[in-house]
Length: 250
Image (cartoon, rainbow, N blue to C red; front, top):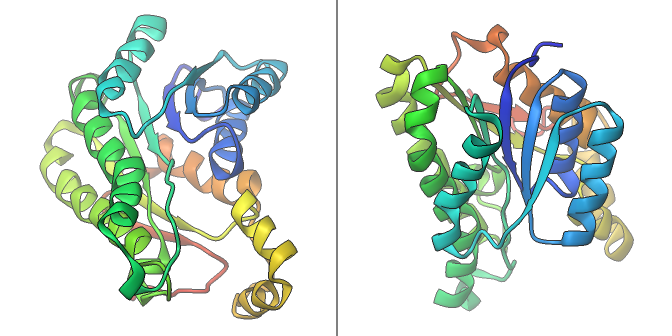
C-alpha cells in the first residue's frame, strides 16, 4: 500500500499502458481519476478498479481540446480535495516518413501529447506544491535513437522530455519530482504490430536483451508506482528506460 491516501490523475487510462498504471496504483491504495476518450473502455476500466477496492473515477475527455484541460484538474480537486500524482501518458500520432510529415501530422502528435502534458502540469502546479507531489511523463526511444517514420511522435516526446527536465530543475525547491518513463509494453499498438507485421514484431523482440515485451501493469505500472512513491523522493529529472534493456542511456 505504498500509495495509500494518495490521489493520482492519469491520462490515457482506459487502455494499454495507462490502464496498467491504473491497476498498479489501485493495488497500492491510490485514489484515481483517469481520463480517456472512449466511454466504453473508460467505464470498463472504472469497473475493474472499483472491483479492486479502489476509489476510482473515469473522466471522458478529448485531450486535444485544450479548453477542457484545466477543468480536468479542477474535477480531481473537487472530488478528492488534493492532487499528489500526475501521470501524463496519453498520446496519438501518425507514422509516416519524414518527407510526408505534414503540419497536420505534426499537430496531431503535439495536440494529443505535448500540449496536454504542458497544460496539465502548469494547472496542477499549485496543488502539487501543497502535497510535494510527483509528476510522471511518458517519452519514447523514437526521439532518442531516431526511429524511422516517427518524426511527429519523436518530436512531441522529446519536447515533453525537455519541459520535464526544466520543471524538475525549477520545481525541486517545492519538493516536487518530475521524471520520465520510456517503455516497451504489450499495448494495443504493439498487439496490432504482432498481428499485422509479425516479422517486424519478432525483430523488435529479438533486439530486447531480456527477450520479451513488457507487461503494462507488472512492468510499466510497477515502475510508475516506484516513481510515485516515497521510495523515489530523491530522484528527479531522470529518463527511466523500462524497455528490457533495448536502449541503454549512458
